[in-house]
Image (cartoon, rainbow, N blue to C red; front, top):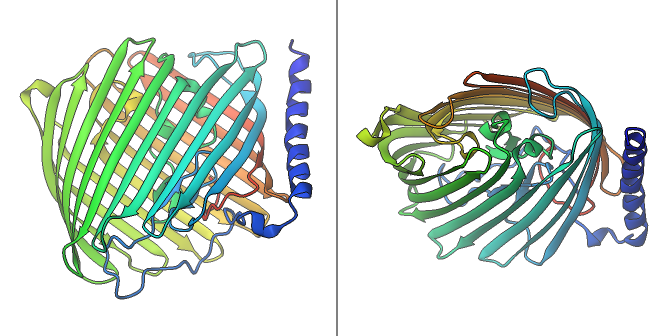
Length: 441
């Protein structure tokens, strides 16, 4: 069995290359696919026209690509556009069992990808599905299924809406091996708290997140927004089911096309293993000091009901994104917010993450991401803290083929349990018709 693993790895990588070559030969019409610009970053990014104030609903909308390719624009498809692809990886895992002193093993993974993007003049939608299957030398394989849907629409010239649904089911540890998931940070793809957080003994996890956002233009410079979100997670091995619902009402005044001020109110309802309410509000600012830079800050006091048995005190969110000269980009994120559903029952989490990427030419790119998260849990599971490091080099071949060398490192501590896990992977990715606009993470 051990001898068969390297053979299987070579066959899987060769199959990915051969499939991409066959598709390229059978589809010579360039108009049949959208050019993959995921490796093209520019020091001269587009910006809203001067008459569009900061906070307007006419800002660009993006959706994370489940295949790890960055961000997908939500305002370009007016006809049905099928997205297909696959990622095949092979390499070394230092600690598959997430133990304090676990034994290393070789592995390979397969992540097929399919999506559908379409829209009209008033509505856009994007559907995606990505399963990841892992195979180990000397360990049993695992799998995780991920799916997402995003809808963006204009109900009236003044009213816009966005609806998002995401779900995953499978072994939580597979999430660390699957393609890295991005979040939009001022038009730059970044990594959020889930990249640095998971419970090693959670077993099979089911997570579902849904959100709805309404944005109404009161005037040329005043905007009203309503955000509703709900997350649910079930951890089979820990016999836990937890949820949190969040409602936020915000008012934005656009002082200019580069500066807007925000006032908001937020209520969080925890239910499941924890049942209590948290409410508060605050102020913030959205600022574009330069054409290629974006800054967002908001925060304020947050009070918890007595049933929570603890006080959050305050919450905040801060982000910074900057597209540097020479096809480089950098981002920073920091926040104190309701706990992510990957960390079990708890009230809040503190997180910091950042990253840098550089495009040397059309074929070569490097990137690095780091993240830290800590949570305060109240029952059943202990408080958690974890760190995440991801570095990669990507070389684009042809016909949507690329090869990447990646190293990831995770360190976590929950109660008396701590673990460290390192991954060294070589991946072949095929995305023949994906319209990503940002560099791959």
